[in-house]
Length: 461
View 1 (cartoon, helix red, strand yellow):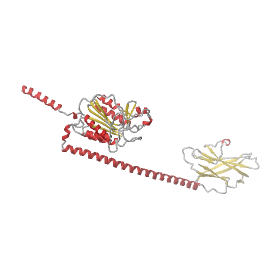
View 2: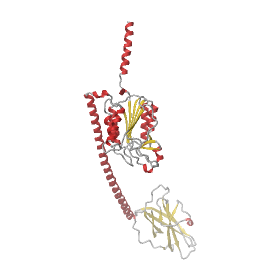
View 3: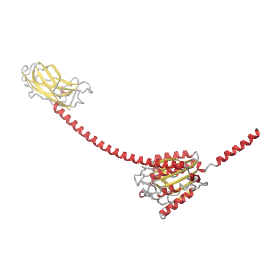
């Protein structure tokens, strides 16, 4: 029995070794970061979003896990680079595809994010992404094989404000071993954005990378042949490679797809078309909602103005209605029992206890927010001074609506000199927060010994 076991175990180990060795190269983990930037404020591009979308779809069908970013800002690009680098640390093949504006300055290549405000050459270091950053992430990951595809050589939109105003991109001199770098055109030249759905470079690449069993070097050789012919030698793609092994976007086994696999691909295409249709519908819906919002805002503003006018009219109506009908007869101004004449009635602002006469400020207009008490002063004169006289003063207060609000009866006197005599009473409130006063015209009727001697008005604003 032990002899039989010794024979079975080596055979089992050999079988496992053969199965592992037979795994195709494409079974390695494949991770791709795809970025398309087109919605620039200055020099927008029509194709990069389509290029990135179609490239992401093609790579997924080839077994890549794809990180897709469209119209990415500086922050989004930097975060996606870091995420991409972390995923590469698990090993396998890394692929970076970028479509959008790319600029070279002082020998370095910069990828331009959406929203970047670049006015001078030095701004690139702080507001754009150095293309060397992606190579650093690949180098740190040490994953063995990396592919960098830059369809980013559109003309420099900021060239006039740059000292060097270099065209196209420069050659990347330092790249980790096992890296394949390709440019959509030769160094220092400009690539076309294209008038179709994709740029000429991406359109050709999508076609040839789908060929089963075609090595990566041959894929880009065919792309170069296509563009060189179509552009009559004006756009010639360029590659740099330090690959030591073979790489196929699709290996030769893909040519024998089953009917089920074919249907899956068709379903992916249908799903992509459906996504585009939904996006178009969302854009149209957003446009209609924006138009309705503008109309709603205009109606709201018109309603606000109408309500403001109505409020002013209502306030004016209340103000007019609040003016009391003051008696035209102010009184006799003469007091027979005293043989005295009312020479003056004056108003002043007062605390709870009236201030001395020499400290009063007389006026007939008072603030409803600042005033606490408003008091009156009655001055009498007599042609024959010599004796002190006592008398009673009744005061009746009326508010801005003509309603009696306060009544006071005071015992007063005139002194023996009879030059001037005064007495006062006030109406108001103790606490500033109390809202006793309302705007309008107030009135005080004064009676001396039962004879109406004055009917005086003051206003509160």
